Amino acid sequence: MENSVSEIAALWDRILLKIKAKMNDQLVYDSFFEGSYIDSIQDNQMIVVANSGLAVSILSTKYKDMVDGIVHEATESNFQIKFVEKDDIKKTVEIKPVKPAFFADSEINPQYTFKNYVVGPSNREAYQASLMISQNPGKLYNPLLIFGGSGLGKTHLLHAIGNAVKEKFPTTRVLYVHAQEFLNEFIKYVQGDNEGTNLVEWFKNSVDLLLVDDVQFLANKPRTEETFFSIYNNFYSAGKQVVLTSDQNPTLLNGLDERLKTRFVSGLPLAIKPIEKETCESILRLKIEANGLNVNDFDPDVITYFATTFGKNVRVLEGALDRLLFYTVNIHQAKHIDLKVAMDSVSSLEGAEDAKTQLSEDKIINAVADYYSLAPYQLTGKIRTSQIAMARHIAMYLIRTMLDVPFTKIGMTFGGKDHATVMNGVEKVENSVKTDKALAKAVSELETRLKGREKTEEK
Ligand code: ADP
Ligand code: MG
Image (cartoon, rainbow, N blue to C red; front, top):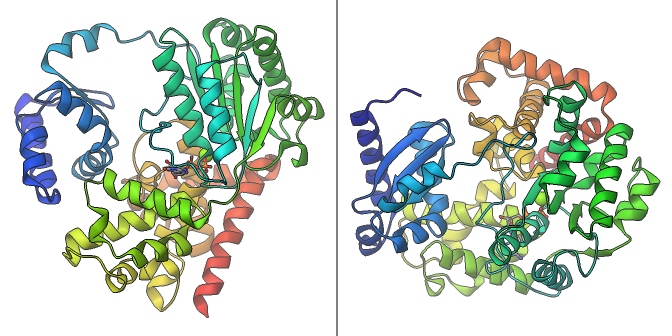
């Protein structure tokens, strides 16, 4: 990307203005954002110099989401923002790792930690086992398998394990991979895209801790399962830890190789159950504080209302809370948030009334994002990992088939893609559902969910 120095400076000034407008605490802005600037932009990475080590740490955690959102808004691209201290710039550039042969885009998300995971009866066992394993990888239960429904915190725990292991054992090479990503990489591998590196050997030599998310995606893929089986066996016999998640107990998964089923549940299989109301309420309080707000400004019945209405899925709960916070900061400008304000802020989410609640492009995008544990802006943005590209195509396909929106208009929704690109994406899904059972299942499940929503909302 070619950007002049002054363009970059102007961009950051614009971003700072937006941040300033959004922050309700001038002091926080002055302390941590003042004097920051973009050092460089390379591909998708934006290096931002902050005014102190503390500012780096605060901006990379507490304000990360806000900054990501505003940068996304200002640039219409998904930059990975890295905050550094001035003195660290040289080091950052020097330690840039060599691009690995496989899973080059895979990362442990530093935002998902044990510290910000709220524990209750529904997830306590899974949490405790994850914590123990990260203190003692490979020694206790292998594999650890966590299963449960969407939005219950499985992916969060996987990343928390990765982060804790990296902290305690900095030389351990940790790989997080979504099973869909594994499939995609495997397909490229079989097509000879890998410059001769053997995939099974690569895992054996390059990874010490393997975290695989959503293994249900491996079902009905015999060759991929075969390869995964070899990889798993190597880990097991070398005493290296494997942690897996699945949306249900793998023994019940249709189309999953019997040997894999047996292996997956041979260590410690643990369920996360639907999160109880009290835990949801604690999660809400934590997220409110994490946004720099005071829980006491919220009526207790607001918390209860959100927990009972949206608590089946923590991802949905977070979305509803974001909406409330956005609403109270930008639209209603309330200091004290009572039930009326809270209900108004989410009225369109619950499917109570009128035209604005009908099926829309937005709702399809949200549903697909939720299904693949992505944020909606990742679907409409420009980053192209294979998992995101796939989810993006599915969203385009559903918008086309369920709403009959013209390709050109869909292209506009997805960051200005042209007619042909959208058409290709839609056709790809159309063809793949015929042979790819997991994809067909995903698409039909999404259709059912969206139609179900349409129906209840028509009432
Ligand atoms: P899953 O992988 O089970 O679909 P995720 O781990 O992606 O769910 O969780 C969805 C969102 O909810 C994430 O942002 C995650 O941080 C949050 N979340 C889920 N459970 C908890 C919890 N117990 N405490 C705090 N945040 C949680
Ligand atoms: Mg997940």
